[in-house]
Image (cartoon, rainbow, N blue to C red):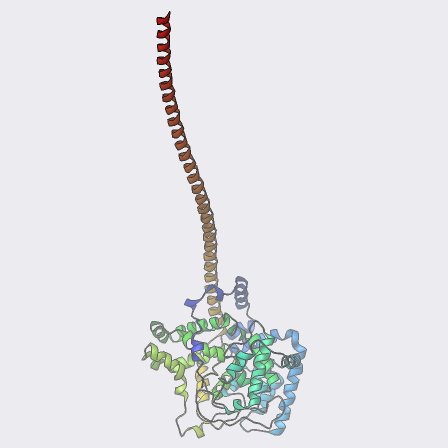
Length: 515
């Protein structure tokens, strides 16, 4: 596998390394703080229930966001329900509670509000693979015929990111046989290109293909595009990929605060060793764990992300740290980084020989390099893609225990909102300080400009002074020369006058003798 890890590591995301360009504008901070203060009543109530709080808040936000697009959402829902009915005719699995999932498909919002614990438990067990693609779309309300039409239009256009996307295709799930298929690679390229055209400001950032991949394995490319748009816009994944990555900064800050509160000893150890969350966790948020994690676990993480929001990632990140706390505490800096990148998930590997008895459902992702994988196919119709994932590598990982451990981590919307407020306040203070520094720099530039002007004037005055001194010296020299000339002339005249007097006296004496 081509290693893209260094490119994730180069993203400097710790709060101590923030620059003014990464800081939200004042009005953005005010908006976020206002949102945190005005959470819905059900979200406030759900803070008391740490198992379903995030799920209920996600439902509230989805309802609020879909108010203006209710008609299109209802059409999409009816289409998904129709697909479910067709599926029931094709297959009835004894392992699936079709009645419950039928209720979920018929009215997800109602089930989420009236049976939040049952829904949460069902999602924790894993959405049935036959329904996963449809349920993801239902939970996110992503089904949108207009957006699908727009996607087809984008396929006819070219993007400035085409070359970059093409370069990354070979590095995306290289161990999966499915993504060796030219058609699958083309779908992956098309969805990434279409989104770069749909959201020009965000464009394309490395890591996005790892988010698109699991979507394509569960639905057609046009539906994957709609779901990606929903993830970016409604689930705030977009902030992870903007040029300054404001969302990623926030997630890592919240993760650090959760780690400090839930695992204080581990947090202190990592701090003393100089290990920052940006050194190992940035790839979690950039790829939603799909870069190094097996795909069956990635699916379970996606299940909970669509149900609870992007904040569900915190559960899994903290669970991994907690499960490996003793091991990490025994390591030093370099070994810690290697372990955090490569070895965190090993505690959930099922020992060889037990895999057939504790199977899971999906493909193995790039974590297991060099293994072969069967290409995913399914004869099911409707919204579920014929590219639904199946695996010959089932039983490698204990997904159920991993998810159960994640839900042992108690995280409430109130906690995350409080951390978001702390982050906004930190950004505000840094922003305020940055404005003060900018003001001082501007004043310094003005003073420097004035000094340069004064220095130029002084240079000019000094030049003029030199010219005046030179002129004065010349005048003095001329005066001295003139005085010397006049004295010489006076002496000459005096000599001549004396000579004339002597001549006159002699003449007078001669005249006197003659007379």
